[in-house]
Length: 481
Image (cartoon, rainbow, N blue to C red; front, side, top):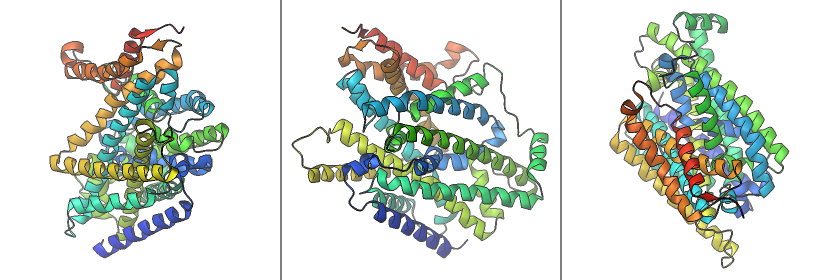
């Protein structure tokens, strides 16, 4: 694939995003940016959220993990589905009843101002780290496969991509990304389907025959029953449930789009449809991974893990499919980054700076303040991505993503306490309790062998973190007067 082809592709893609942004951000205001004037189309939100939920990490890592884990990710997906049902039935009605713009305002009303600030701060920390890590992973793949050969330095690639995202989210915010995420999800799914079809054709296999071959090579294994394993079925289902509950239902980025829909019923339909589409797409990603591991040995591809998909595409697929692969990769990159930047700007502006509560600011002054926050988060993303490149260690990405288990645990504990109990907390102690959860989890995680022998904590670290924070809140609480 030539440099001219790639440059033309990215230019055309970006031009399309700018056209969408220009059309959707006309007459935009702060309400448009934060919650899309509560007039978003639920079908568009549902489809666009699929791309936001998966990100570039899913696009590369889910197919790559099949060689190691088989179809074991289905255990986590089952937990996801149960988690989405809980969000639909419990959290969405709560947010709509309280007419929230930032979901962390719930913590202020139920627990107090320190609880509110603690929840927002942990969201900002977690989303900044995880979105920057995902951005780094995808930019690094683009760099290694194409941009290095063109002589484009990594820092320039990152600057250009962040500038693109900044340009089309700067004014419209949620009102714009509801449409751009829909476009980008379509690009990602199209790439997935076409690459899957090419692999089936190249191996002269039908769907059933390919599944039989995968079964013969032990790629379709699902259940892990060993209790000591981090991949144990009950651990994975439970972790999937709580991951969705915390990282979707208690996450401003995802909920910001949901509460931009006019009615609760439409928001619930949106989440239900998103769950169905997301499940189908994730299963198709796993199936693609199985095809990659069937194709690789005969084609002489030795890459595994995150490297197998790019290796097969760049080494064996025709140029047209390479372009389609990059459409999918870029489409997976932008929704996770643009949504995160918009949600972080909203949360910091509303929850930390209190722009909606400030009567001393005009609407124009609030908009200027929001613009500065948006630019600041863009600069932070740039600094973190360059830091990850400087470290240049694949385990660094895994480490940062694991940190989300530490940073979302306090949110899980705070919301669970607010919803499941009727007790009042001593609000000044809440920041201490919220910090104690991740600290204790780190101590436990670091000393697993001493504490548990052969047992290993996996994704359930998030659950443990939330439980510690919930218990701490009980200790600093009292009965409502």
